[in-house]
Each structure stands twice: as structure tokens, then as C-alpha cells.
Length: 209
Image (cartoon, rainbow, N blue to C red; front, side, top):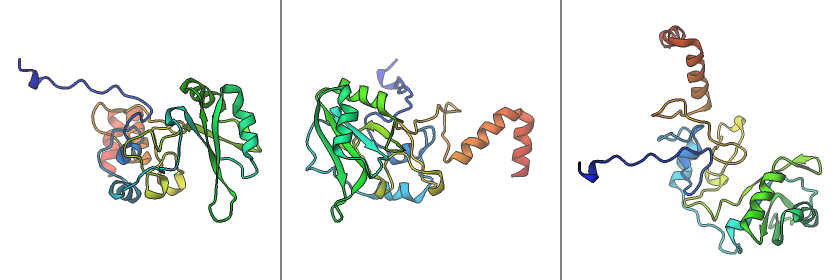
């Protein structure tokens, strides 16, 4: 048999985005969609974005801290995250006009293991009354990264109908079907109901549609 006829080995399913940022993939609840289901994804696909060249340090050693209370200071962050390793650099992001904190920060450690340990131990911890989000720094890590303002990013809220998946806060759900994905949360829920109801429930739903 010709080696060219051998089908490639399917990539192992993962609940996290690893190397490449695909806007359509992260807009999918199970990471298998091929068509964008909201206009923000189309905007992300058509946009061009370059990471901030002024940001220094090793992205593999850097963590992102989000959902911070505006009262949190850089000194507080250093005190909270120092137990997990040697902090090389800490940056509490502020508004360029007002100088006020924008609710997120970056911390670079001396080793990747320290950064991963901080993510594991600090994600979901409450600081100054707010539960924080701690994840890897993705902007310089993922090829094709698009920030939230361009329709990409990670996370999101149900109210905006622009949920993004494949990250610490919202990992991909394991696909229901071997082939084909779901275009929205409502489509996912519809398929789950069909599976629970069985063939009778499925035919009844299709008749009503």
C-alpha cells in the first residue's frame, strides 16, 4: 500500500488550546466547529494582530492574572504569588490615560514549573473580595492569537453570546459525535436532550421542527 494513501493519525483530543489559536475552534463548545457562529468570530478571522513588542521576558514562564479587584496592588500580588517560585517580573496593567488598574496583571517566574504551580494553586482564589482567574500568558504563546476586542480571546459571558472555549476557565467539552461539531451552546443542549430521550424523542423533535 502506498504510504501516500495512509490516512494521518487523528490528533489527540485535548480540552485546552495548545499551539495555534483558531477563532472558529475557540468559539466552539467542543473545539470541532468549522463555521463561525457569531459575527465577532468573523471579525477575529479577518483581523490582523501583532503582540505587544514592548513586553519582555519568557512567555513560557509568565502567567496571566485576571478579574482582579481595582484595589489590588503590585505589592499584594507579589506577596500572594511569591510562595510558588522566584518572581522575575510583575506587571499590574494600568490605564494609559487615568493610571488606574485595569483588573489584570502578568507575573514572570524563573522557571516554567513555578508558573504552572502558581496557576494550579491560585486559580479561583479570592483576593480583596474577588475570585481571580489565573492562566498561562497566551498572547505570545499561541500562533494566530486574537484578543477579545477583535472578537477573539478566551472566556466571555453567556449574556454576550460570545463564549470562547479551550482555556482554563472554559475548557472544551468532549465531543458528542465522532465527526461534526456544534455551533452553539443551544445546539449542544439540543443534542444532549435527544440522546437522553432516545429514538422516540429524537423523531418527535424532528417532526416539531
